[in-house]
Image 1 (cartoon, helix red, strand yellow):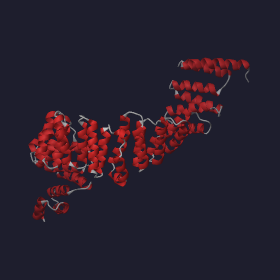
Image 2 (spheres, one colour):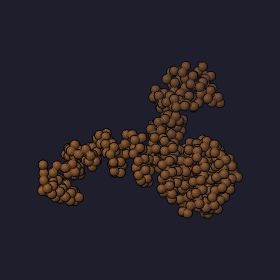
Image 3 (cartoon, one colour):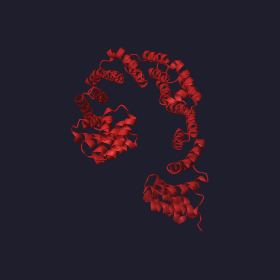
Length: 500
């Protein structure tokens, strides 16, 4: 037994130790706490010692004192929390979870619940959701709701995700990031009425135009990226596009996206009306006609894209993007000579315009001007040595002409390494190997290409490689398959006539 004097001494030493602990003088604090224990064994004091040892990264000692504290007083939650924190520090997460679950059965603090939720996250998302829901009921902080949203997304619980983001939007009604996510979820889940209401609410809200744009752009881009969804809700989308709120008239981006969506629905007149408003709102901003032209290109209205840019190109004669996109439109309209002129102009304006160099090379290829195509591709590879499309196309061009095959193999392999499941790249690599006489290896890669949905060219090449290996019957089968896929292949007909 101990008397009043022991109690007093114990308190004095404990207060002294606590003061030293706050000053992060942990060894001295431990000595004071140990003196306190001599006068009164206390779970509180043992826990304090455990915390000091934990701060000193002496986890074995911290664990011994924490366990002793829990054994002395099974009702002292802080001892269990300290023990759990020690277990986390030593990587014993499952035991830490068990300890925190013991705390949850009593009256856990918010900090204890947050720690338990974090421990659950990588192991059991459902249990983590349960704890975060408790935390959200206590105080639906934005951070807690973000965590819940992340977990509901991970578990593909769309209803829970929507419910959580709605709660976040109620808490932070002026947060455009949350508003964007919510309206996007409404679109994805087919809740078109809620999406429309949210968009109108943001349009009329008293806030900056950029914030309104952000929310509307999130919804419109989601619609643009899902043509099936857009067709399903065609009438509701058209109603939205026809009644874009007046406060958004100054937003050329919103107007242009509405026009692009109208084009997607085949409503050319509505699209042109929205594009006209976009041009009025955008003034001399070069991005306005460029975005409209890109919308026309995406809708495969190539002449409209060209005409849009041609009308204003003179006002932006130092912007390489204008001749570039005009060249893209010409290429799609099979006006290869015109595209060459435009792409050349683009790279003269901007020698580092990689995409323009790529398209220039493709245009020269279409015109069978191999040397010029190579020069354009060399320019690309100086800017981006790992450009997979150019490495592939350049390698194939060299292989077809039996030129510089060692370099062709290196380039084709770069493309395959980046996209090992791309059938076209596998075919190019196989064809380079075949041209080098490495037909066993070539067969491996051409058969990988065929396994990924082989086309007529792949079967044609397969037949040539098999014939080089002396497997003539199998080669004939592959050529026959190539002819089934493309009956107009005269070269294949010639081979079949010769070897059947």
